[in-house]
Amino acid sequence: MASYSSSFIRTITICVFVVLVVGMASAQLSSTYYNSSCPNALSTIKSAVNSAVANERRMGASLLRLHFHDCFVNGCDASILLDDTANFTGEKTAKPNNGSVRGFDVIDTIKSKVESICPGVVSCADIVAVAARDSVAALGGPSWTVQLGRRDSTTANLSTANSDIPAPTLNLSGLISAFSNKGLTAKEMVALSGSHTIGQARCTNFRARIYNETNINTSFASSLKSNCPSNGSDNNLSPLDAISPTSFDNAYYKDLVSKKGLLHSDQQLYNGGSTDSQVTTYSRSSSSFLTDFANAMVKMGNLSPLTGTNGQIRTNCRKTN
Image 1: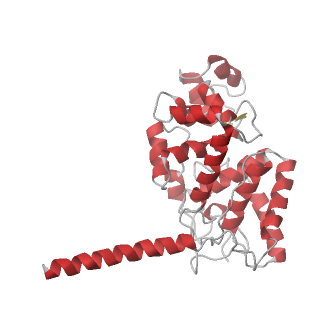
Image 2: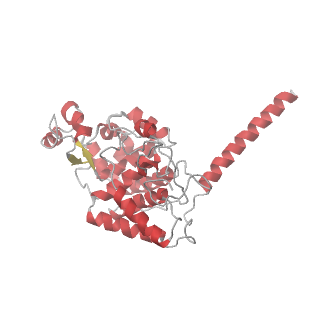
Image 3: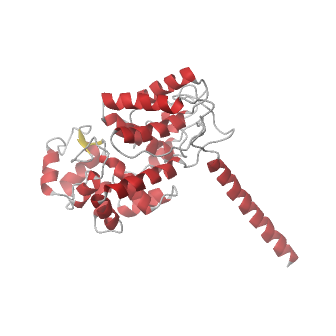
């Protein structure tokens, strides 16, 4: 009995230690992280994002997507920004990213501006997180307090990028599972999917839906076929939200209720399943969506950050120091 008790106590002690370590990693992120070390960091990032979005409104969606695709691969560590090296293949050529993820030049510009005022202080991972927030705000969406203090990874993970970033072909169960694997609930998944109220998708990602699926508004499907023929034109673009593609609002959910979701994965959120009622709520209440989206973005931005002495602060976001 004494041996059992000792073993049990050791197990409990280990569990408590693990919880404390994980909690400490998260606790090291702070909204005031750069207040002393680089007080103009956030205003510098915001100014650059506003300029980029004013120049091309689609860039707001691209910078937001960059944050999603970064966080879903080993956490929010700017691994998506790394170019290929002799030691590893980066994530830019992963199927979900290749030829579609963009905004790298904007991040480079922001990094250069921040480095000029605070060399070696602000991480690329934090820049990506803040740029996503500022992009949403620039397009009329909500703002939120970004927790800061992430450090940058020194490697990338191509295989995880291919496996963990949710594909546009996923059914509802697959979407719920993909987000659950990252500690995000089904409700948070539906809220985060609202990011598709801005941005565009390539024909190759919605061709099967407009030609083969039945849970789609017929006139909507027909209107897309001229720009997305049954063969070829894979890279032709169509807006994810047909109502207001450059405004961050709840129109995406109105599209879903009207069976006008562009991607298969979009319409799965409103297809007789467990998330229908949440889509209905968001389609009727913009404030509910915007509040839940902002809260979910904070949670997603806290996925497995590198803190303390882990990782580094890259001087160039495309390569390790």
